[in-house]
Image (cartoon, rainbow, N blue to C red; front, side, top):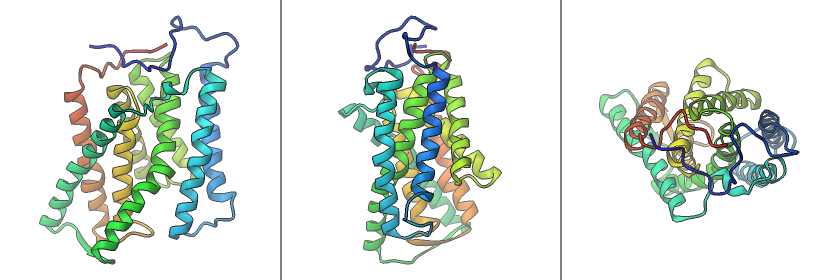
Length: 283
């Protein structure tokens, strides 16, 4: 198989060695993980925004999360790793844009098929609670808010910083597993994982996003997949949704999760099999 896609911002270091004066890899990973948990808890509990949901509060939380988390990860990369931020896997290039669209398509296309299946079989009924134009506007807004509140900061922390650091000492397959476990633990600690099923969704989602990073060499495909999934899910399910859905459990299992996750993994394992080297490391 081909070697792990290189991070252009990294300088080579002999395998198994750390640069002089750097904190150990485990300490760096745990420090950034703990900082992420504390920052998300601060946004939700440590500000006067309150715990109830409304659109202005959602906007404020999204902006505040991006403003706090993104610079914190960049600083950790510079101060703890002493490496350029480009190693986080967020290139501002046409390739990054293509990967973003690829990730979004990997979720949207099979999700549309799952949605059609649910409606055709009568497993799910969907009732619009707002006019079409307003529902489209809500989705456009959710795309931006999900990008700022969840996709960009979470991908930078877990698939950008943590997975990249783990890759300096561990095989790519283990980095995917470990960051997915940490991602699930993060969800538990900040209060969004509240059941075994939800934990399984987080673990599967995190592993798939990690596989996108291994396959493409950056985190843009994962961001695109993350934005597509969460923006549509929030459009149909939960507080502030623009639709009412009966059969929500089947809808979530088939259209939102099961079919898109399986289709995305099938695509990655076939289309990118030459770059999915699970034994590769990148010291």
